[in-house]
Length: 263
Image (cartoon, rainbow, N blue to C red):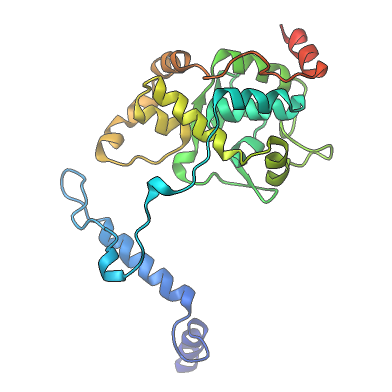
């Protein structure tokens, strides 16, 4: 038994007899989570975890100065109008829903309701492989405005696999998407957030559509609202897409023909 214990211990230690970096990190992270999980009767943290810049001696990160590129309505129109029909639909979907690129690339026609007005996000693509979404909150329903739903119905017709795939049926690579757009497409997600806030959509609904985890106990109390499809639909139509329909489908003839057939 002593030999067995020694073997197990040595597997967790480096050549110096000290715990491996990964093991130390797991221990520290777990300890921090245990302390942070202690809450009072109101659900608020008893021991809030705050970064102590003075004690650690690390530079303060000013989030307001971090580079977070976004795009305007005009720029989104230019991106879609200069793209092929496939990429034009993808970019319009990203700007009109705020999906993460991995979530969009994992979409199949079966993920939508019959009218394509509601999308069920259940998977993501990372480095060409299918995986679970980023967080539990990322598994969600996203309401889609009718103009975008109409375009998606036409685009998805007859497709069994991934909607945005190569000729071999594999998902398009992230790098190829960014190259086709000429920008980092996460900017389209930020564009959607700006659109929703201009329309004064409730923050808890924005969080649901974007797949953000609840931040406060009030957010947790409002969880029931996400099951109210009528309320969600009203806000979805009120917010719209924030896009001009001129040039939205792209300038190429194949896009125009596909939309005419769907009418």
